[in-house]
Length: 120
Image (cartoon, rainbow, N blue to C red; front, side, top):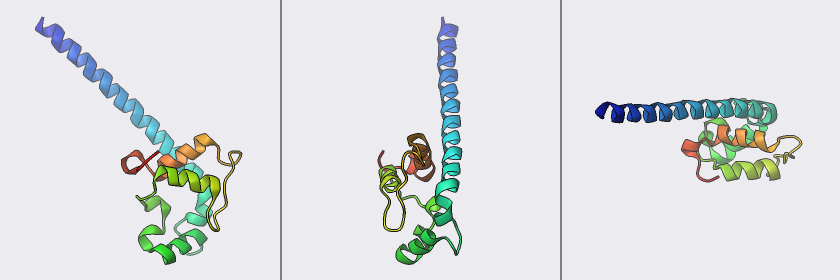
């Protein structure tokens, strides 16, 4: 009887560990895809370069710690979505034909991972 209880607990633990590994792989894939979206659509203006206009603007208007989007931890998901779809100041908006919803979510996951996300 005790062996059966132990065996059922072991099965549940293996199941839970399996789910953890699967979801970790999914989140890692989203981060890779988000990085690719960032490189394609955002990096020209937001890369770590003295020639990147958005990085320069953020550096001088908000300070060094806010200059690089990839190093920030204060960008909530809803804000990133709004900026991408509506633009702001010199930043253009991006239509769904340029950055589709799946790519946008990958970008959001890249720039505002769950651990630092304020709100979806």
